[in-house]
Image (cartoon, rainbow, N blue to C red; front, side, top):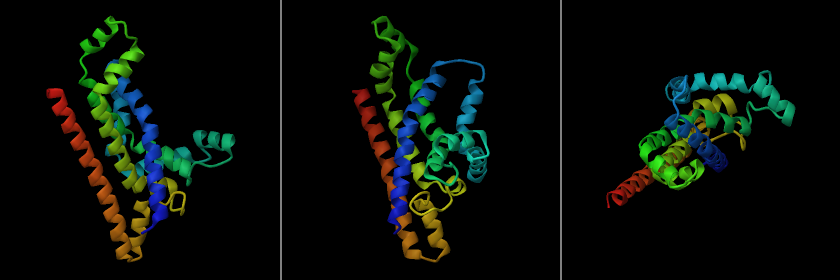
Length: 223
């Protein structure tokens, strides 16, 4: 078992979830409550990683993060470090490829909130910010939990984008999925089996927690 790769994977998944929580909430709120030109294009762009082959997405991200690109060059000039083949670049890429897993559940949850609920809160004297935190956020909580669990599990198991952006640097960009691939190529069946079982267990437990939470929430709402 490659515990160093496990540590990198957990760290990456947790940081990605922490980053996607405010980003996903902002985008979901915007899409659920606003009607503007290009809304469909924005939602399609957010959903694109779901249908785009990981290697294709990884290639475009690698080009965008390269030190010769505008964004990559700006990062180098500010920090002195490159984004490509680094943990920071892998973190940024993880936010992009896990974005739809965060936004879509939050968006679906916020779309179920009736406009009359917001209007009643505003008429009661609550500001838009207080309405969001005291009314909308609790109502959308099941979708937010689902979004975080899916983002965590997807980040933990991603392979194609991770390999393209991070490569295979031990202790920095080598994740469990990369270590598993290397173990299979090296015919290390026991190590490959242990890592596969860990990824399977984490995914199963995460999704089970979502189902339990949503069902308990549904019972409370019916009562």
